[in-house]
Image (tube, rainbow, N blue to C red; front, side, top):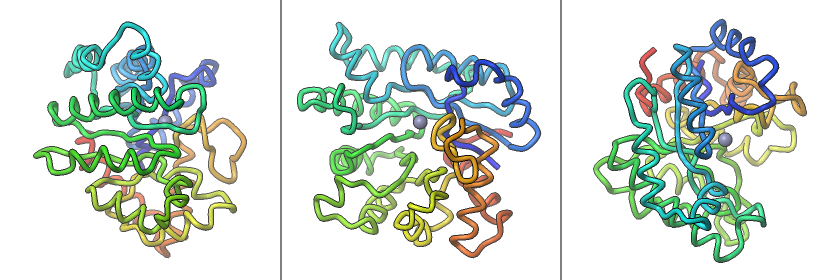
Amino acid sequence: MIDTHAHLYFDSFNDDREEVIKRIDDELDAVINIGIDTTSNKKVIELAQNNDRLFAVVGFNPEAVVKLLESDKNTDDLQIELGELLLPRNKIVGIGEIGLDYYWKEFAAESQRELQKKGFRAQVEFAIKNELPIVIHSRDAFFDTFKILSDYKDESYFKGVWHSFTIDKSGGANGVSPKEQLEKVLGLGLYIGVNGIVTFPSARGLQELIKEAPLGRVLLETDSPFLAPQPKRGKRNEPVFVRFVAKKIAEIKGASVNDVAIQTDRNAKELFGLES
Ligand SMILES: [Zn+2]
């Protein structure tokens, strides 16, 4: 099984990171650590260099983009910084997490949304140029995220995953049903990342949607240390808990956990080109 989205560099792993990685070695095939800013991009690379099963994705999330572009940096600087990281030994398998986040008021004021969009586009273009898949973060920003991605979907290389795919309230508010949201994302040729949210009893709507989603387009993820699945809800999440996500998807689809694991592993390897 592969956890395609984790943040093992967070402080909440400082006390027992080696043990968490040991459990990964015992139970999982691979884990992809996702950077969000300059500091964490370095950390995901370091983790990947030191552990066979760990891979790195680097990028600037919406908050980091706003901070950088409000300082003396421009979008060229973002691309240059990412470019300097792309060395074979760094095991970088994608660009992310990148996207738009209109949920947090501190960096999603109207003028800041424009900065988010600029930074997102610059990083999508960087990924395309370097033939790397993108890991997309979109919160309360379905339409703008979709619109920007639509501009690139016909490029000769355009691959990625819509991480933490859930029912976006801003989409619903604009009259696009959850099912249409799913169709639009799949229509872009993207994978959807499914995490612990799907295991929550309150997530009936999402469960219905995942039932409709082709397994060939689903990736398993945890978003560790966040979003711990049932029955670990409320605790710190860690990559091996991805098995609870797989179990729930199997239950929803009436498939075996093994079938879910085999298909989603195949998807992850296809998208990120993992050698393991
Ligand atoms: Zn994340």
